[in-house]
Length: 417
Image: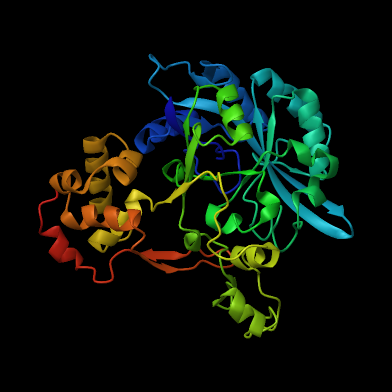
């Protein structure tokens, strides 16, 4: 069965998340986006875990659906949680985010019991534990060998396994004897597979992409496309085997749009490529303090292959821009205006879900249902014909699809429906 999965999200119990990150909203938005399998996020949080137990029931092996779901067409939930490990190793403070996959509620309960002795699971949906990442994987796998442990957003400066501020130079340096249980890493919004393929140390690691969403509308901004058995164990086998027949491709941000692609200083409004940073010895020319070294620079530091390298048998990827961004750029408006939302709803009504529009719909069909500018925007994104302004130091990058936006008044005079 072919389906799209987004494993890494957060609930309303995580900091800086929308109050709408509940099961009903997530189910509704997964259908709007075209996502079949969605991570629950935050199963370590007592209140969220209580909700999961009360509201979900088993469907396919290791997957769950809402009890209110009348048929088999609804969203499947997979039990996941992100844990923040902050600890000292080799005289350096490490801050590593780890995504844990669980095959059952009973396994989650046992993991939570272990971790509850170590830290306060009530404080945040993504708990902060003073726990070595290798010790976390030991605890999780001691509960169930069917669990999966994946380093989250591997390259981000502050909380990635390879991050410039608190990370490591290899998986082995971080997990030591437990490295053999790391089958995948999450590339994060600021890197894509092409960047990761430059590192031979990742040749035996599968690359996955997820939204890390804090609001329902953002789920699926990165995702994974499978053609395998719809079950926890089908997904697990597809990841471990790195089968090109079962794991078809990942859906990616253009990495320049991520918040940490380039180096820089947000407060000083300084953004630099790795080459520019090197000229300044990684020091901000405005304030004289060290720059926040971004993902591209860190990849350059660890890479042992040239730009553009593509080793054999790698899971391919497609770079997309969220539909609402495309519509906003085509109309010359900000994303949350009434006109943009109306046209988004119109397109979803006509094409069933967002991924159908972004990936499958042909140009002529799009033109028959929406403005030519929006149809052209979708095609331009598919072909990579866009202008990029890289993000840096926590500031999202900017994407421009049209350099000659028409005025809002001119667009508004056209018939949208």
